[in-house]
Length: 192
Image (cartoon, rainbow, N blue to C red):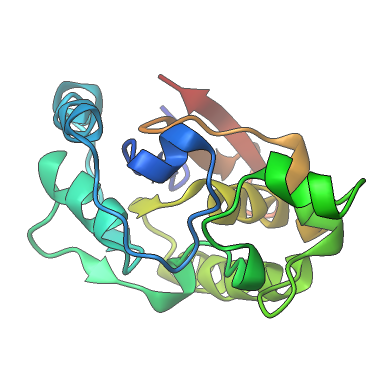
């Protein structure tokens, strides 16, 4: 346990599109039965966690994961926690995109009619500014690509470096500090 505030990140539970690999940005896809069960299984994993606030993406997959994990009451919806806007690539798998655009990489190239990494990074920076101002333990429920960018920006890395992190559904990660509040670190990542 750290003497400094820790930010606990939870990726939402499984959806039909996370299972199939379809890009799920702004489509409001519900959790599968397995996703709901995994969200309920977060209860003992998060037992004893003391937080000052709970924040959630506006998506039902994040909000329902939050509620099933036992933190729905009082959760604050933060629009900046929404998943990457995939624009024209919404609902399409990476394999399908690569068949038409060989070499495409989300974190480098972004999405036509959607967001680039810098756009997602700007949203992550606003969340980080709120977290630093709060200076308190906060629990966040959101989606994979957004949380990966948030992790990169927490460390001061470019948003494109979110590509170097991976997050499984219902994984738990913890952001924090080492010696003082000027040394942000990732304390744990992608724990199942």
